[in-house]
Each structure stands twice: as structure tokens, then as C-alpha cells.
Image (cartoon, rainbow, N blue to C red; front, top):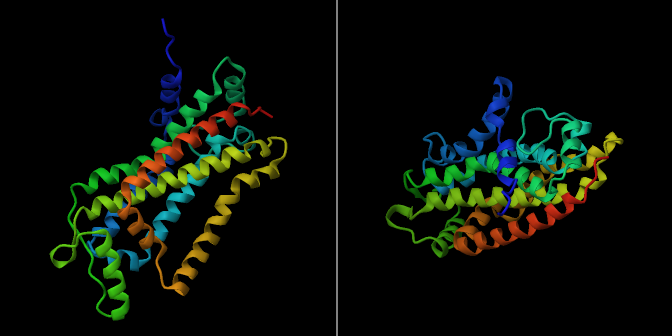
Length: 289
């Protein structure tokens, strides 16, 4: 008789967030979930913001703020799921899916006859569900929201409006009054794909540097904090280059995704599979130092 895999009990254990979540921890996580699930759609449809017009949404500059908030949360929680020594250096500020709260619990898991690859799989799955679920709920919610439009600005240069019209016509069959067919779904799916890409890249990075972070040397935690420190620099450089080169990196990436959704989803699935196999193998070779 085939033995039952320990993945599901481990996943259930990692997802026991609601059993330990208090008022203080809820105050930390709730803004992240609202930001990831509701705020992107509110920014697109709220009367005081874009009012369903994509041109206005990308011009307001609110998307970089939303993306920065999501990435800050992800770069804060991901190290606890991928770097064993970090639990000895710092205690997690809140119940984080995939994180072991103290070194003794981590040592217990590492010294038992447990497949570390399955342990890492459960931890990464719990973190993926917890941090990216709001984005995928947004995709579902976008099926029931109003239509979105693309209406260029009246005060924008004619050449700019013409260029943007051509870009959107290549991707979307614009209907009467600039209505974009299935535009809301494309927008929400673009955010979910971007979040998944960031998740995979950060998981790969933290698994790569996990061996360098040692509980006996507090300064090695700087390796884990590098993405957090580099995020503001990345956004400043990106925004400055966008102004100088007269392009919007967010709008261009949205149009690219909307023009090749199936290919990008398939590529992401393949990348996720290869990344997970590599990360599990590397995690299984770590030692509790």
C-alpha cells in the first residue's frame, strides 16, 4: 500500500495562519491583502481616480505605488520561508506562512526523517497562496466589473495620442467609444502574472543566498535585505528613464502581456516548475548553522 505523502499535512500546518493571527498581526497583513486585491480595481474604476479609463490609470502614477507596496511585503516575508538561519537571527514580526518561528522548531524539522524537498514545497506553496491569492481573486472579480475604455487625453500632443492609439489597436479590438473587450480581465491577469514573476525571482534569489546567511554572523542578514534596499533605487531609475525616453514601463508591459497572454502564462508555468525543482534541491542541502 502506497504511503500517504506528508505534503498535505505540512501544507495544512503552514497555513494555520488564522489559528494564530491576532489583532496586531491582522493590522499588518490586512492592508497588504486589500492593496493586492481591491486597490488595483478601485484605482481603475473609482470616480476619483481612473473612472474606467486605462489612459488615465497609467498617467496617475498610482500603479508604481501599488506595486511597491506588494513587493515590500513579498521581500519581507519570502526570506523567512527560504533561509533557515534567518529564524535564529530575527523572530518573524507576524505569523508568516512557511516560516518557522524559532530555531528549535527548525532544528526539529531538519533532524527528523522528513524529506526537506517536500517541506520546502509546502512552505513555498503556503507563502504563494497567502501573498498572491488577492491578485488571483482580483482576476475573478474582474469578470463581474464594468467595461474599461481607452480614451486619450485631450491636452496631450496629437503624435502621442496617435502612437498610443496604434499600440492599443494592435492588441485590443477597440469598440465604440474606446471600449476594450475583456480589458478588465487582461488588466487583473497582468497584475497576477507580474506578482507571480516577482515571487519566482525572489524565491530563486533567497534560495541562492541562503547558505551565506549564518546565525552566528548577524551582518549576513544584509544579503537577505538587499532586495528591500534596491527596490526604491529601481523605481527611481525606472521612472526617470520613462520620462526621459517618453515611455511608460507599466503600460508597455501591460500591452505586451495582453498581446501574448497564453505564451506568457505557459512560459511562467514552465519557469515555476524549473525554479521549484532547483530551489527544493538546494534547500535540501542546507544545514542548520
